[in-house]
Image (tube, rainbow, N blue to C red):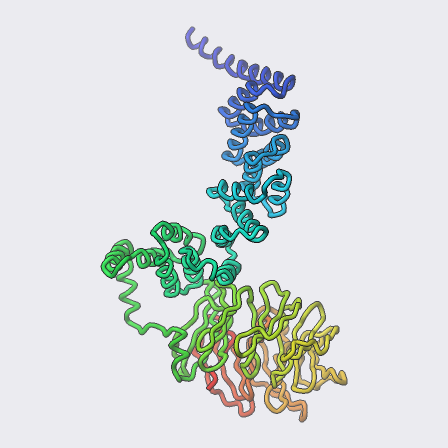
Length: 596
């Protein structure tokens, strides 16, 4: 009998629950302002984890009312938070938007923007429009939103609000939070630019130094990062450094580097530095094994050491696609590695004491050595034949600028450049840049004036000291003055001028790819002589040539039958090989030789 009663109860209980839900729904249909029925119904749905019905009911109620009594407002507000916590952000977004329409106040505004933030649907335009609807003192409203959004994830709302406070209202007190938000957004270039531009305003703020240090950590400049943090401690009462160290999770550096960095910068004297580092070594038991191997070989030289010496140096990029690793190595004439620059996409010597390169991590063009400069937001540069100037192109491909020998900007032009390699005339007076679809601009290097714009179907335009040449879509090299076709032995993909009007060109491969391998020719337009100097040279699809011509020398990469790469420096007038690197399975590109 007891078993029968228990079974009957199990059958009756769901029917009672269903009846209760239907009764509450009927009451709400009759009176949507019945907040007690709403509260009871939402509780049932919450206990049953039925958040579809939870969100649907709440959405129907707020759509049916024209005003909200305070008790119902609190019920709806708590319900929206519940929906956010349970990842029903679409319902929360629609309901909070209606709530803000009915009750336009800071509290409901924050809730509406919070739901958009959790749903990754925020934009600057939405925030501006929503705040504009509220009216009143907008600065106070933005400050309220900034303070209340400090703990949100993602930090999108605080980033947007900080940006508006800084850019629209000049509220520089929010510069530091704005820059922190940029780190979270991985916009390291803008963060660095803002720190540089506002250094006089922020010089007494500890976070100014800490943020510069974090950016240097991200770029692999560890000693510079330590120096920034030590400067910041001079302005810090101890309250900011731990917050700054917590920001390191915004960037990617190995865990052991982060731990050692913290051990160093948290030390107050030599004794605590020793203690911190000893504790670090205990926590990383693999360090003695690592050190036992590292100590067997000399440490690679830093760039500043290489530039201060007199040795002949050849550099080139090594790219390992399997390990996603790229670096610039510096080698002596015997091919022995002297040092390197990690995470550098492309680099060349400006002179024997100055080096310019593109940083993969820091998103900019950097000059180090006797001359120093930094061009944030640029990711391409092209060096003049005499190494006195270089052209830089911004990350978005919308501006080109000429940098003079003193590292100042000589001129800038709006130009939608493409991946077609930049070409200089041998005397460095003119430059040919692809500045649009089938458009090439010939620019005077001194003035920045566009001498001529060529709107024709060419794969490449390149220059002698006096004339313009092009490679058409059939691979013919064309003298543009009279549109005559040069009688080369093979179609060309790329070409440039060397000494004595010789044209060095790369033969068009059978199949065009990002990395192409084919014959490299030297052609004499005066005699018609065409000779091959390498039958397995590499050409990379990039806005700067992967082959470098300098006088009678040409620097290039070639492969053997086993696919091993080696860098070759060749005097193409005598066929004398001046340098040949060790073979490598890595792709070796962009070779250069340190000038005397």
